[in-house]
Amino acid sequence: MRCAGWQWRIPLQHRIGNGYVYCSDDISDDEAASTLLAHLDGKALADPRPLRFVTGMRKKCWNKNCVAIGLASGFLEPLESTSIHFVQSSIARLIAYFPDRHFHAADVEQYNRLTQFEFERSRDFIVLHYKATERQDTPFWKRCQAMEIPPTLQEKLDLFRSAGRIHREQEELFTEVSWLQVLVGQGVMPQTYHPVVDMHTDDEIGRLLAGTRQVLHDAAAVVPDHRAFIANHCAAVASSERCGM
Image (cartoon, rainbow, N blue to C red; front, side, top):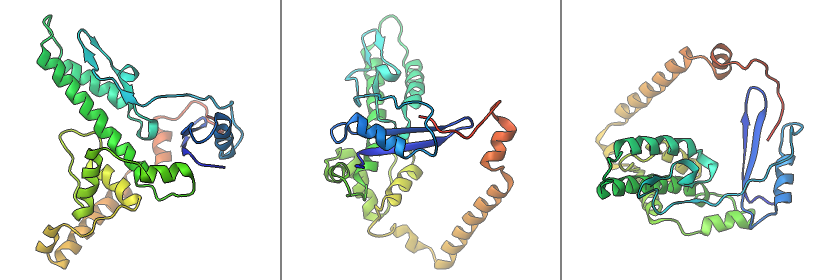
């Protein structure tokens, strides 16, 4: 089976959610459905339901006396599940710049500028997953490796490759930790370490790392595991281990 995208598997209390996000230029809907069904943990609860989408955003999410929020404003593919956040942040932004009867142009322009910034920086983080892939087993992934990327993403890659620096501008959705996980996790490594490290001795660095390790160990020892938390706080009325889509 050719791979032209990525598949998710989300265990829930009453079923296991599955989906396949793929490029329709590379495989047909029938082939995508077969790929999805072949990778389930058990019997499907329903037939696959194809959903088509076009990524992008409106040129102006606030235009005159209309504000587009949620799917009306745009959509990024679901790799990082940004849609709910975009709804919440758009509402918060609208409250911050809510107009009186005059609709000042400065308020509208600032709202649109901040909305575009949030979409584009989130887009960069999603594109990174595809650009930094190490897969070369299908034409789709080879094309992703060779594709041109936005200048803002290229700047982040160049900065990280220089000495492991990650700059989070203003209130980007994804933090330095998120960028680090994807960059290092997909094999993007800096050429050298940050020069500030040389200001500390090996013993000082060792104590810092040991202290961090101990804090994480102590925290993990007192919190319940995932199964126990669900059982105590949000258990479903009835659950069964089934597979669905």
